[in-house]
Each structure stands twice: as structure tokens, then as C-alpha cells.
Amino acid sequence: MAEDWAFVHNRASDAAWTEGLRKIFEYRDLGIKDGTHGDYVAHVIRSTERSDPDEVQHWHVHDCTFQLVYVLNGWAKFEYEGEGVRKIEKGDCILQVPKIRHREIDCSEDFEVLEIVSPADFETRIVDAPADSAD
Image (cartoon, rainbow, N blue to C red):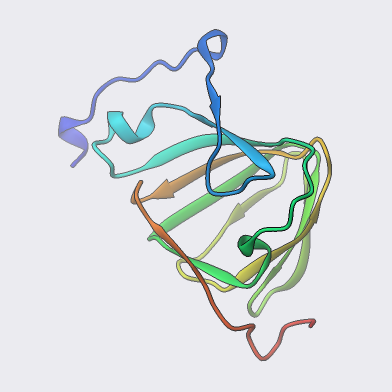
């Protein structure tokens, strides 16, 4: 695994922002997927100031083994199965346990996060709300 990873230096001055899973966000790939041969992905995600609703605002899970979210700017409200509604703000960090049901409720126009996920290619599935949801 780690012994065949490649050194990566992803320069901010060369940042390329693209569409990704969420249409209301844009994504900057940090090159970690290529450097780890798909073991991990790391990207910065920021708001596009669009408000188009999408499926990920419904209850969903990510089929991954590791997901860390560090808030770089702004805030968001999420609801997590068994954890309730959480507001995450600049400087906050979330370790999202594998396959936890969750949903986004709202986010600021300047919301920006660093997200690290393993494996790099993972599925996102819409699921039913858990029994303890605020809905």
C-alpha cells in the first residue's frame, strides 16, 4: 500500500476547480488519489453560491472506510444518525464513521472544507431517514 505511493505537491497557484458530487459546490482535487493509487482522495470543496436542491440533501450514506471533514471557512448544519443536528464551523473537524446516515440541512455561502476519504472511488447512496431523525 503506502510503499508504492508517489510524492505529491499540489500548488494552490495551479488550482483547478471542477464540478463534483454536489452541484452547489466546486471541487479542487489535491492529487492524493493519484499519489496513493486510489487508496485515498483529498479535495477542497467550496460553495458556488448556488442553491439548487440535490439528492445529497436527502438522507444518504457514503460507502467508504474513512471520511474526515475539516471546515476551512463558513459553516454548515448536518444531521447524523444517532448524533442529531450538528453545526460545523471554521476550524471544526468531523470524523464521519463509515456508512453513517446523514444529510445536509443548510450551509453558508462561504462554506469551504477539506475532505479526505478512503477509498478514493466510493459510492453515495440515498437511504431512508433513521428512526431518530428530526424530520
